[in-house]
Length: 109
Image (cartoon, rainbow, N blue to C red; front, top):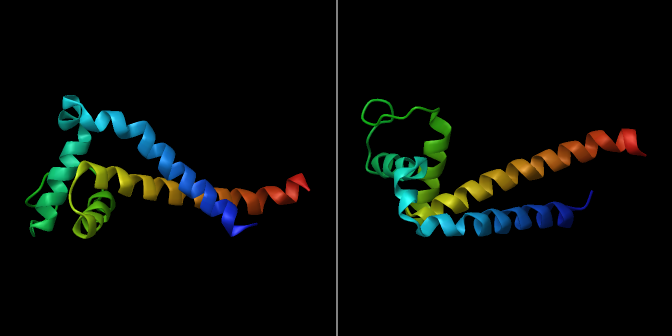
């Protein structure tokens, strides 16, 4: 397996994910969807509030702490949220590709 192929698939998925979502960033409806709650909760976590005690969060702790760490480095903006999601999704896609390539070569050779 070539590392350049995995890198290419990952980079392509990041670009495609951002390109497909770019139009929704500039609509007024975006502010009233789930992404805005992620920005609000991450802002509260970055200010030192405790998840589940000070902030209502209906999901597990990984997504908000992952994004809060990302937002601490790059700022808490919609573009940062989409970039962090693209990085997470493309990493998962790369892991799936590596696992599938290792498992499927026994059957396809």
